[in-house]
Every structure is written in structure tokens, then in C-alpha cells.
Amino acid sequence: MIGSDYVLEAHNIYHTTEVDTGGCFNGGGQSALVLKGVHLTVHSGEVMAILGSKGSGKRALLDVIARRSDGSSRGQVLLNGAPLTKSLFQQRCGYVTHACDFIPGLTVSQTLHYTPTILGGYLKSSKVRQVLADLALSQVSHKKVENLNISEKRRLAIGIQLVRDPVMLLLDEPTQGLDPLSAYLLISILSNSAKKTGCGILLSLEKPRSDVFPFLDRALFLCLGGAVYSGGTRAMLEYFHGIGFPCPQLENPLMYYLCLSTVDRSSSATEIHG
Image (tube, rainbow, N blue to C red):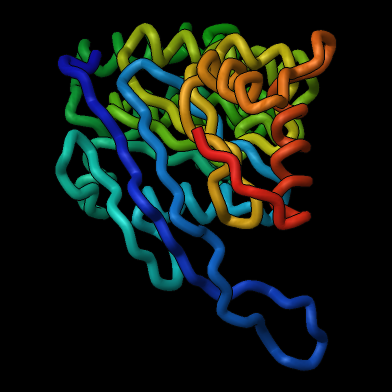
């Protein structure tokens, strides 16, 4: 349980890195500006979604925050007002990617037990049981990791981070490849975990479904590396309505404004900020 409030802030983030140009003969890519003056704020207990189409800069932003990006960056990433260094991130935060390799032969419970933490003995066992319950993994706790389905593997990867009690948790496309029910379950679990433990959660989504909207406290829309909107989800609806873009009643607001912002930026229209 996190004992105090934490705030993760990113201010005026610019990032340049090498991108694949798709050429067959040039043997690589070329340098490109993939993030352009991005701002965001996430508080303890909140879930923030980074929304954008492929190539919008979602993963680059997560990597910059986690201090694991290639290329050059400028701007500030702060945790409670202090610069978020690579060492501080590793100590206090977690990052769930798709490249999580489990040790074959171990069960789900054993995998969590063997995760290095400051806890030991009864406290460690109690924490593992709690994480299993929170992630709906108790029923498969004795199942070997190689026999898990994709949804269970995704939740176990999250559990490995949660057992360490991070104050901020980053997730790269956690619902990718999941069926609608599993995706809904995962986002609802993350939202409940954020409220229960006080952990702030920052996750990227390329194709957000309407049923996850109630679980999101904040949203950041990215297009071509720039922020179209960054702020609360309730304020988002009011903001876009106020500038003449109300969301139609039967539309998914996440996808509606994602498509709208992509069209606006691609056509060189005025950039929208919240």
C-alpha cells in the first residue's frame, strides 16, 4: 500500500530517434522528431490512457518516461517534483511491455514469489495472495506459466510489477491481442488496483473500446508526435463540446476524438489542446 500521494509529470517533451523508412537498400532508418512538446500529469490512484494510431509516439513517450529510450530527449519528467532518473524509476515505478519472458516450469504463484521485493516471509506470501486475487489469477495460481492463455500471461506480467508496490505503473498496449471481454476485464482490474493501492497507471491504447471509458480518469491524445488533448476525461468532453466538436450520442468518445484529432493534425489544421 502506497503511503502518500505521488504525481508524475512530463513537461514539454521532445524526442528524436531513428525511425525505419522502409527502404530496402539504405540499411536502416533516418533521424526523426517523434515527440513534439508533449505534456501530461498523472496522480496517485488515477488511470491515464495515451491514445493514438500507429506511429503517433505512444511507445516513445512511455520509453522516455521510463528512461529507456534510444535517441535524444529534452523536457522534464518529474516524480513529486524531483527529476525521474533511470535509477529512481527502477526503484519506485514499473513498466509492463510485451517482451516479458517467464521462467518455464514455474507456476503463477511461484513466479510472483520469486520476484525480488523488499518484503519477505509472511508479508511476501500475503502480498502474492493479494495480487493473485486482485488480478483474477487465484484460480490458476498452480498452473505452469507455459500453459497460460494470453490474457492470463498479460495479467501475470502486471502482477510481477504490482508485487513490488510501484507508485507509478506504465503499460504498453496491455489490451493488444485480447478479446473484448478480456480487454474489459484487464482495464477494470487496473482501475480497481489504482484506486485500492494508490498506484498511478499510465497505459497506451491504439483502438480503445467504449466500455473502458468509465475506467479512465485522464486521456492524452497523440498524433504525429504532438499532443492534441491532455487532461481529465470529463473535462475532455466539455472541452471539445465547447470548441464546437460535441461527441454524437451513440459514438465512442475515445475513438471519435481519436479519429477527429488524427484528421485535424494530418490536414494541418489548428492543433487542439486541453
